[in-house]
Image (cartoon, rainbow, N blue to C red; front, side, top):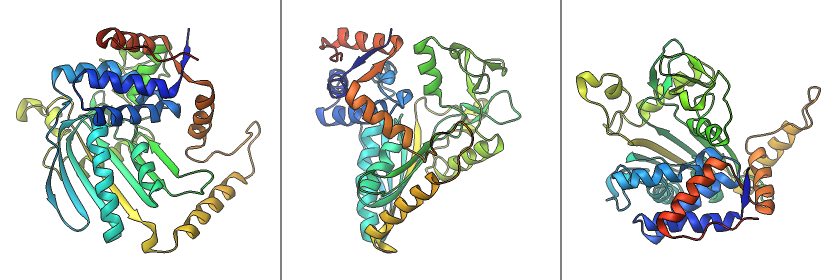
Length: 350
């Protein structure tokens, strides 16, 4: 049975769990905030369902609770950051502030991050940029987990990309956050937590055959076939190859070069100052007009409303703020394990 818990109290619990594993209070709060941002918007694949895996990664050292994050090089509009296997939200939130400052000064800011770990929902970071009046782009790459359309094995990562721009004051930023696969692995994981099957278009099993069993899924399938695959391949060129930290080819050719370090990710953030080109108030109005135009389109039979990116998430945010965050049995079990381990009070049910 799915239960519901108070979102604010779930965030409290999550931060305390990460403090329990050795993170500073500030870093634990950042990690919890990013996870709950996803849960509150219905992106449960990137929310607290990850807590078990993150704590295990902290225990093993593949996600460092006290990383040595440092700037490797810097110019007027660009910065290169060594993440030292920090929890992704910790180093990426740090990078957001840096690229925002650069965009305000130079018109554009670009950050390349090497050796981060799982960053959560990329839309969080681009939304933070858009809330500062900037247009934002964020991409992350990993070792391969997605098949080329003609392959039975993983050849690229299902690299997510997010865009966000400032939107009307009563709505907030317009945010797109998507993987280059048909579905993210987190959604496969959530299906397993719910005891549900997955569509046979989502993933391949260990033999490279389509599967409907979340537990058997090993390799994701690209969205738009060659389109999703092509984007993912070039994202590796803009991240791992530029950072001299490739994650795709070393894993495929591991017999020759040795596999990349487990858990490593590379990422870039880009921020553009809208006011370099015009007035921010006017831009927000143009975004509002664009949204209104899209929603005015004639609808097919059975379609009640035209959605733009972020609409389902905003509605879920309203509903979960009011009614609480649903916890599937598998996810709640992970919460209970963490509560027992650290002696924490469970999140308040509503």
